[in-house]
Image (tube, rainbow, N blue to C red; front, side):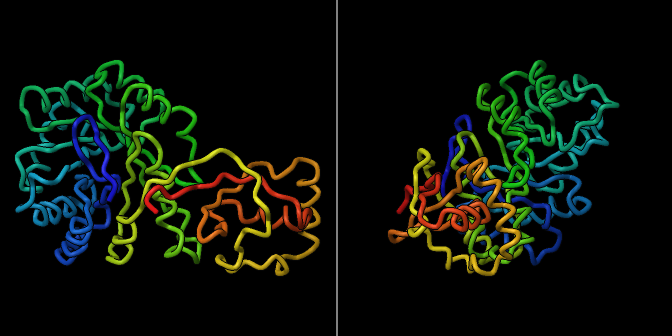
Length: 322
């Protein structure tokens, strides 16, 4: 397990998300995550009508001091008194007397953010019921407004981030990096359910995400094999763009045969490659003197169709833990 220092808190780079937790039998999945090094667990008062908090509370009760526990207040409870009451109810369900990280789950434009922030400060500084403050699903304007009130009391922002949803790279992630706020990425594998390569690929995706500075990934599973693979995700280093010979790319590893692609489609896409190039580098990882494609399979196939012997631009992802 990779760990990161989040303002003095040593937390696992893989956070176990509690959105699927709802039954006592799910304690075994939580325990699997903990046994594999996870110490950051995330839930919400709204996950499964509070049952997620109840089950997580039962699972970590004897190990509470070693767990960095996060939960969330829902958007319907962002008035001052409601925030206080929601926190106390979460504490009761979680069977704990403090919460390490308390998030606003979603913004609510009908309730002034200043009122919500006042309640969060009361919980943190006077009542001592929460240790850190975070926000989920806030756009850059909403995050800036909250930051203008709370400043460096904001520890994290949580947003969707994966290979298909990367809009936060334009504003939220740079804002977090500038102000020392950690970014927690949820739904990191959202696109993978459309792929038959889930078991093969998913740890690479998690590795790519946690390789970003100040980034933690929140992922959830009720499959212990999947949990173990997630926990084995490693930091990878992104090197400069290089030219890679197409013959050194092992396309068989992803069971993709260029000859299976209809030639008329390749001709159309090939014209674009001739005119504009490969558009952007493919991403590969080197293993046993061969390159395995992580992102950009179609770009590679079209490039090889047009230029069978011409090297293609690639970003090589190197595993620092090899």
